[in-house]
Structure formats: structure tokens, C-alpha cells
Image (cartoon, rainbow, N blue to C red):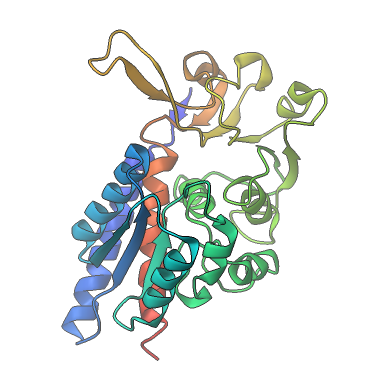
Length: 293
């Protein structure tokens, strides 16, 4: 029988733990964690994502700051904004909401974030430490997926994990985390991408399939073996005349047809998304706690 990997319920459990940790910090006279976010332009999706993070901060008792800039900001001015947050001792961690306007060099901006405040886990220093299995800030989405597997009690030891997508934000770090010597971990990992030949032959061998390819309903039932664990990272908006908005969110997996074959599967929405935000909150608490010593 298929079981749902409920990211919303799990994220609420994590938030309850974070709230307790904040209350304990405050009772001990320690600093309240403070997360900041830089938002460039007025992309509706980006604004919504940042809004979710600000609300999560309020729920767990963090302080939050939203720094907004127009879409035509120069790269140097944006780098100055990053440096200002680096230098602000009251800010424990901050994120630069992606995507940025085309005239901005995303990588240059992300590399300007101080590694000790890089709670998104995108800085090369944190990426390198992750590859070496050293303490660091893990990228929020892969961290959230690993936490979801762990809290559901899903055994990953010796399993074959197939990752669809090789991005530096999800696919690559996901492969590193699942193959590490730990629990969850110790998987044999295959990373597939747009140049992979006979893709379905790879996915049908997966005990754990992580879809992060950015194409609605790309993963169909014939690509999944019986009993697989399927993690759907995709967030795609498709037309739906039954909705007031005329559209709805869906994942990279054809959920209705794939779910009956799975032992576990994440829904969209309500799966990986809430776990990403919860993991960002965990990273922010970690950044704050590192200053206590």
C-alpha cells in the first residue's frame, strides 16, 4: 500500500522543535535567531517564496528582515547589499532569492555571501565541505529530503538511488548526501540528466527515485518499479479549468498513475516544499548557535 511522505506534517514537527529551541535560548539570555532575505525585482513566485520564509520565521520565533531592491539594480549595488548583511552582526544568516535578473551574475553574488551566513548552502566553501562530509550548511532542499526520509524511517542502506537532474541546488548535492557513509545514506547513486541515454532503463532500477528535472509529469508509471520510494522536487504550474486561477501546481511526477506503484511518494504541493523552508530555519538556528561559543 502506498504511503504519503507528508512534508507539511513533518515540517510542522520540525518547527515545533525549533520553537522550543528558541524559547530555551531566550530563557538563557541568548540571542534570538535572525534570518534576512534579499529580494530583487517583483517576480511573483520569488515574492511568494520569500513570504513563506518570513511567515515561517514568525511561527518559530525568529527575527526576519526583508531587503528589497528594484529589478534594475546594478550588480555592484547588489554586491554592496550582500556585504552590508555580511557585516551586520545582528543577522545570523541570509539568503539571496533566486532567480536574479539576467544582467546579474548569480554566482558572483552567491560567492559574496560570507560562508558562515550562507544558510542556503550555496557558497563554494559549504559545497566543498559537503563533498568532504565536513560540518557545513547543507542546501535546504536536499537537506529537507534527507530529513523526510529519516523521519519516515525509510531505510536507504545499500539501496540504488537515481537522481533526475544534476543542478548544483538539488541534483548534485542530493547525490552526495545519499551516497555518504551515514544514515540516511550508503546508497549506490546514479545521476541522470538531459544527455542520459535509455533514461527509463535507469529509473526502473531505482529503489529511491528523486525527480528534479523541472518538467511537469515527466516521470510516468512505466519509468518506476514496484515498491520504489519517489521524491518529487518539481514545482510546475499547469492549466486547470477547474481552478479559480485557471491553473494549479504539479510536480515532475505523474502522481495519479505513479503513486499506486510506490511504497512511499511525496505529493506536490505539500511534499518537498515545506521541508525546504524547515531546513532553512534549521540552518539559521545553526548559524546563530555557532556564535554562542
